[in-house]
Amino acid sequence: MNNELVVYIDGAYYPKSQAKISVFDHGLLYGDGVFEGIREYNGIVFKLKEHIDRLYRSAHVITLKIPLTKEEMTQAVVETLRKNKLNDSYIRLVVTRGIGDLGLDPRKCPKPSVIIITDTISLHASGAKENGITTMLSWVRRNPVDATSHEIKSLNYLNSVLAKIEANASGVDEAICLESNGYVAEGVGENVFIVKNGELLTPPTSTGALAGITAEVVEKLAVKLGLKLTVTNLTPFMLFTAEEAFFTGTAMEMVPIREVNKRQIGTGKLGPVTKKLMAEFQKVIEDPTQGVKI
Ligand code: PXG
Image (cartoon, rainbow, N blue to C red; front, side):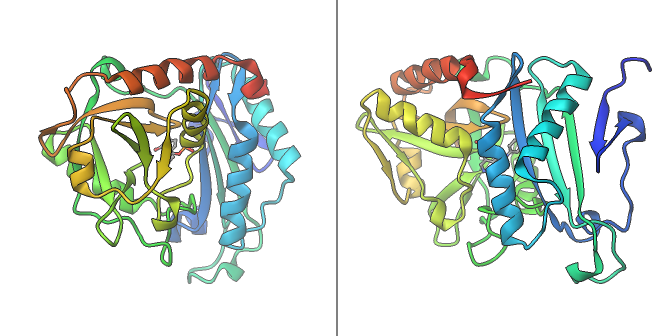
């Protein structure tokens, strides 16, 4: 048990097997809380500032007052990573509404809880980066922006979980969700890009896709490479007939999509634009100036 990982909960560290929260926490009872998934590469927490900024924006929208300043939160993440001595780890930051009586009114919960988990993450199936993954358009629509919008990274992920169940049942690697008007929104935890006439297209966040931090990195790389990037509504037809398509996300990083609902995308092989962007992306995650040092 000596090497058991520790988890930060409200300023104290607990061994992984002892890291628990109350069954009366409204994070559990109502999905009332926010989270971030972050990666650490070789001692650098990639885009930590951007993730912490997004966490506080999500919290702001659900009127959740995080009991730490952003600086304290950054320090707590770094300290947790130092204690666990992991390399290339995955960080899950969770802020819950905290303990309260039954009934969904957040005013029942005087003290939000902050949880920082650092652990390893199992990567997508081997060969996914070279060969791409299979996907399907799920019947599960993204929640609209005037509902539990995915612009908020909240603890309500049943929308994504339902879509994932559908992908699993169909024997494909990942699901893609449409938004309420029928345009392509995003994967269950990934943003979607397609290549058309050598140009890059991606859906707007205004219809419910999360403003992905990985997507932003890739968009900047595209501009740097001189690729034209257009944020626009994508129809399922545009996705099916794309020359190339790929996902971006903290967990997935950059992964080519080779199939959507049994339609082959492009040649079905890693395309030149995706390949070039993946190579540039690899350089960025290896760049120590792109994050916070542990
Ligand atoms: N869309 C949704 C709905 C997400 O939850 C992304 C896009 C990609 O965003 P980033 O900022 O990561 O490029 C996400 C991110 C997990 C997990 O454990 C989920 C995410 C990130 C990391 C891990 O399922 N979601």
